[in-house]
Image 1: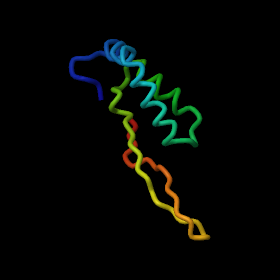
Image 2: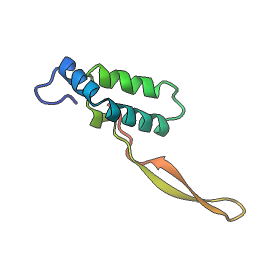
Image 3: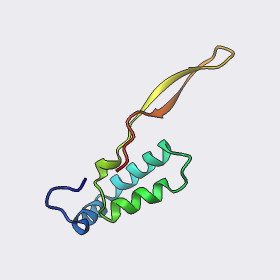
Length: 85
């Protein structure tokens, strides 16, 4: 999980220097896991504490087509490769 040659302190400093990326990945995780109210805080504390890399929490979404009972089509976004360290 940790980068080669990096300590928790140096990884935490690296993640702090990339704060916008940390916020973006934490928001994606929060969107992918709406039933857990602490997702955003957990991800940010792990990243800023130097416990993991930003890529350890990557998540991507895909559109899934749905149809209502009346036949109207729509799509929703669902996580397709959510990762958690």
